[in-house]
Image 1 (cartoon, rainbow, N blue to C red):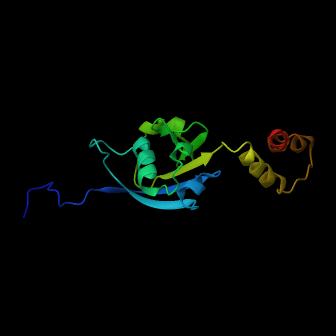
Image 2 (cartoon, rainbow, N blue to C red):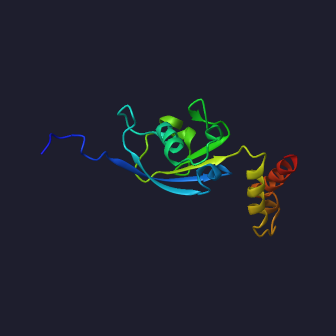
Image 3 (cartoon, rainbow, N blue to C red):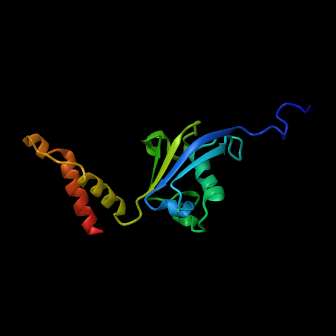
Length: 155
């Protein structure tokens, strides 16, 4: 039997759920949902973080050769929103966030000239609307729909 920590010992992994939306799924074999077992330690021996995950996705999961649509100068490309367990990654430390088992990471592209706005507008428009009071007539969701609708026309 070898000493503890020998090379034959399997490296611990972190199970993650990854989702791509807004057109990014095209870069990942047209699959929106992925389950990954990411190494718990990065190449330098530190805890795996979002920055390591982004590199891992490019090297191991991305099937498309156009990596520049996902990363720019080894960082996530501007215009891609990231949610970590439904919270904006800016609240979690962006690329330095240390991944935890069971984390759900969502990458959403906003680089498609308002396409995402139009999808949100369509979802809001299909909700039933009855204005029983003056307050309901001025509900923020109604104004949001009008705002999004005008933005979609611009794109």
